[in-house]
Amino acid sequence: MIAERLVRAGVGKLRIVDRDWVEESNLPRQTLFTEVDANEGRPKALAASNELLRINSRVSIEAVVEDVTHRNIARLADGCQLIMDGTDNFETRLLINDLALSQEIPWVHGGVLGAGGQVMSILPGVTACFRCLVPDLPPRESLPTCDTAGVLGSAVGIIACWQVAEAMKILTGNLDDVCRDLMVIDTWNTAVRLVSLETLKQTGTCLACEHKRYSFLSGEHESETTVLCGKNAVQIAAPKGTTIDLSQLRDKLAEFTTVSANPFFIRCEVDGHPLTIFRDGRTIVGETSDPSLAKNLLARTIGA
Ligand SMILES: [Zn+2]
Image (cartoon, rainbow, N blue to C red):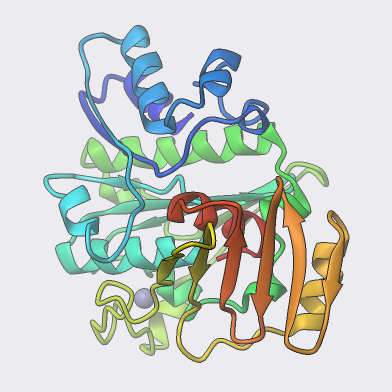
């Protein structure tokens, strides 16, 4: 939706990065994909790029099928005037934030959960940054995810369009008009509000924008994945110091899948893949040797 609006507005050059492929469950909330893309399991970046070129053949679209990490994000953002957030997890957003601040690239955060969402524009050195708002990775088990809370397609549309309105101000140089507040919308209860970020910015405690410590960019927090040879499974290590409240997580997962638990780990099954989640956050995803698929399932199940 973001890419479509940008292309229709005449933005000439886009680089779309996505590690995932199109599935039927994406269709209610994503406007560029069709059943054919889902049936053929086309990479999202590629499917989006094909459709965007049908809308406007004069634009240049670069489709990149990669997982964004601290190792490749500088290359992925190379030459970009603006970064748009179409991600679904805090780790990647905090990584984008570090990169954007360190290279002074503006970016527009957007997030949707359930029937609501939020938008925040970050102008490095001018506005509050995303880490002012989210100082650290929230504990995984405390967060609802798209699978536990669902996502309303119209909320995605509203948030995406709001992000693009901010993008147009930035790309046309109208920086004074860029919103300084966090924009929050709840479509179900019909509420829109602006949350001032001025106080957050003034505390002067933000590690990223105040102290220029880019710990997500240096890879300190990144989840590491290992393919477990001979087991057809992928292990995903959690960031250092993670402790999962297993009983809380069990209750959350029990809302949408069958969960078995013991004091050391819990087990559940998602899309035919058994997940074993340990107290230190380490997770083993079975029936696959594909790290991207494993990370995707983990993000959808317990958040990231
Ligand atoms: Zn900050």
